[in-house]
Amino acid sequence: MPGGVGRPARPDEDRIQGHGYGGARSTEPGVVGRRRMIQISAPTRILVAVEAVDFRKGIDGLAQVCQERLQADPFCGWLFVFRNRRQTALKILSYDGRGFWLCQKRLSRGRFGFWPASATAVTKTLEAHEFYVLLAGGDPASARAVPVWRPVSLSA
Image (cartoon, rainbow, N blue to C red; front, side):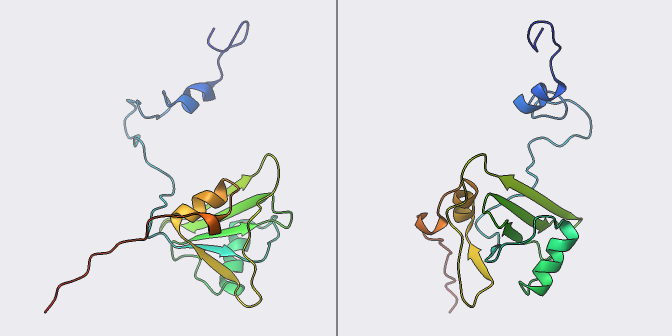
């Protein structure tokens, strides 16, 4: 048996490996192939809340924090990143035009070593590569990347 001696395979095992249930090789009608839930690219705006939030808050509570404390529109499509007081977990709120996404990451061990501190600012903006470093538990301030390049218009 694929699940081991005397036990059936879990349905999730195929899903994890990308087979069946709408995975990359699925032939089910109406199933989109390899689409990401939230695409994070260079132009994505990412705002990190400086102060910790109560992690009992869900989508509505965090959207309210965006409006009242961060002075930002939660419907703008940006990623809003929040941490708990112990710095062991993050919540990410985003609106995709049809509804809100709320993602959570909790570290198995340790704490997020980096967190912005400011006497005046309530948010810190991160670039996409810095965000990935933060999710891995690293320090985005030490992340180096090639500068963003944009073509210059040659209008006369």
